[in-house]
Amino acid sequence: MTHFIKTASATAIALTLAACASTYDDTASDEAMMEEDAMMAEKAEMKEDKMMAEEKAMMKEKKMMDAPMVGGAAMYPSKTIVENASKADNLTTLVSLVKMADLVETLSSPGPFTVFAPTDSAFEMVPADTVAALTDPANKDMLTKVLTAHVIAGKVTSADLAAALEGNASYSATTVSGDTLTFYNMDGGIRVADENGTLAMIENADVMQSNGVVHVVNSVLVPQ
Image (tube, rainbow, N blue to C red; front, top):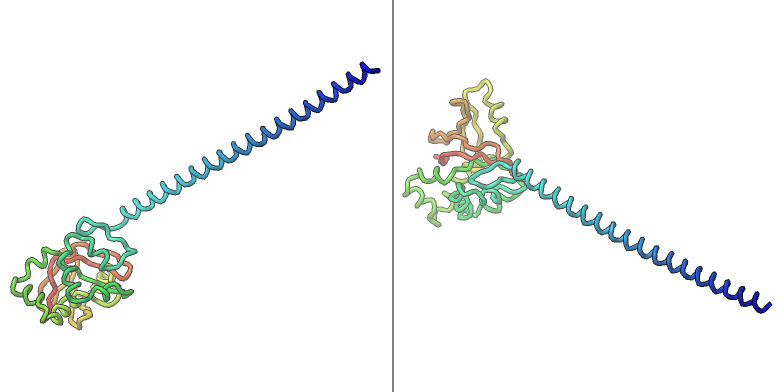
């Protein structure tokens, strides 16, 4: 009888130890699975973050490729006329004069505006005494008039100009300054003339902005 009790006790202890070991193994297994799940979740999150970063980089690169280049800089349609022009290294004179005439705020407003933007080379062709007169603070009103003679209210693309010229020898538009620009179809392209008859060629057409459109021209358009 005593031997049976001892045997039963040993068996019970063995079963208890086995149960404890089984519980420990299950707990350890659960912890290991939780750690593995956490690692997998972390890896998945890292992979997703990497994919998102790569996608953003690709979208940025695509936007840069889609944006037209002016003066070595990308012109983004999400930026204003002044923001884009300030990045172009061939429009530095124009930007400087716009600031001098206090037109930055105007050309940064919703608009829309159509700007015929003369390059630095275009301003170099203007006589030095005329430039000196325009940049004299006493002649700010004259400078403002000259600059706004390059601006038409509204958004006028090259397609709009081509449509207006279809079947017509010329097309005229009134500028913000109240002066007139006249457009012609010449040599397979559109030319714009000021009131003095000076013709300018559009070098970069339809440079879209958030508040209008810019056409880069190779001559300064001077009102009478």
